Length: 517
Image 1 (cartoon, one colour):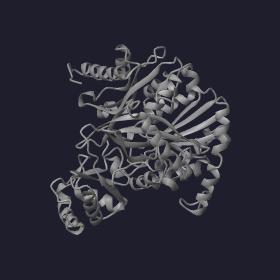
Image 2 (image 1 turned 120 degrees about the vertical axis):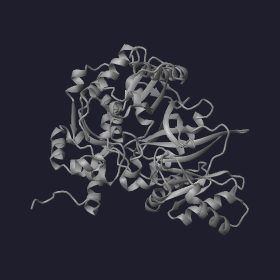
Image 3 (image 1 turned 90 degrees about the horizontal axis):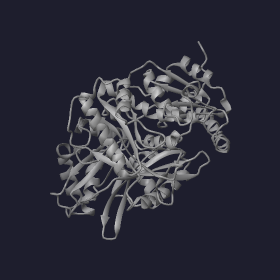
Image 4 (image 1 turned 90 degrees about the vertical axis):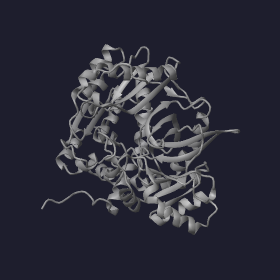
């Protein structure tokens, strides 16, 4: 029998080994910050290590690994090598597309520093699990690492799987310690918001049973008798797909807690309205019993906005706000993430930035490192905008790759003074981004078709003008008719126009004219 040289997953020995690896991140960060030209190896594993039942709600979800191809732009650093691992082999056209975007670096030079590996596995298992099941692949990854003392692992999110993978590879993980993952659950978010002193909807966390939900909804209604709706959320739901709305405008908010709870409990199976189209009561409550969740008041308002802030705690524990966005939401009650605009509106983006800084400071003190997003619901009042913090996405999210696309393509910087992003030319830059441009008629378009269409119609990002369209999720186009878009312009109107122009071109190329956008 072959002896396993690694500590058992989750054991005290593994935790100690992981802590030792993580202790290297500070020195590595300082070295690279001093001189970005020093040799380094980055292993990128874009595993969506999230609840499989929630992932199943997303069309073409395994192609979402491609969103981290934006990290190929790290190859602009001349001594950086990337080892990028995916579930299945990516179309070479997709890889070439990203390499062609690199500013000031010949594609051949970048390609010589890029190693693409894959598991040849299209199953629904998270990519990290697939790699862990393939010890020969792990050894191959390790052989590709030329500078072990200046190498690290980058993932989409961080769980016990990624911790075990880091140990197997002998690399520090540039992400939050999985031991802190609870801070990013819906319950953990509310506790962090409370500690940071930021406003959030009235509600309750750490709930698990139907009785818990019914009592919490009763308390929410009694707190604001005129409230029309309450929200029930799974702890580990994401993109709004784990949320449900409970209409209760007709219930008596002055009734006793016991009477109101009993009434709500009877109504829940039929009245609870789910954001995910395929969700139903039995599966939702099964997941709620398993992962727990929260209940909170629906934020009322005739003109609601949904801004978010993207934050980062670097490897030496310094928190910073790096962008704000206005989210584009859809779904039955407007809770499903569809896209974003950068930056958030002039009227409140600095308020969002200030609130997010308080949250980031709390998370940094708790040991969080890496990127995360904070979502808000904002409504105008007579005294200005009121912002309610809704959740923390303690991982890379839907606003991460659009912002990195802008940053890498332009080599510009975000200004905390006004919340704008400035290219080296001095021009502020704006974008509209989405992961959900999807039409059945787009099915069958191959990556080379998309590139040809973009170039022919002048949509491709143009470095000298610093504007144009960048595509992602290209691998999902032929099978699912789904594509991601980041449209970059010199003002919000231009960015939106470029996105609408993209839809128009794709429609015309697939036989449709005159879409109303």
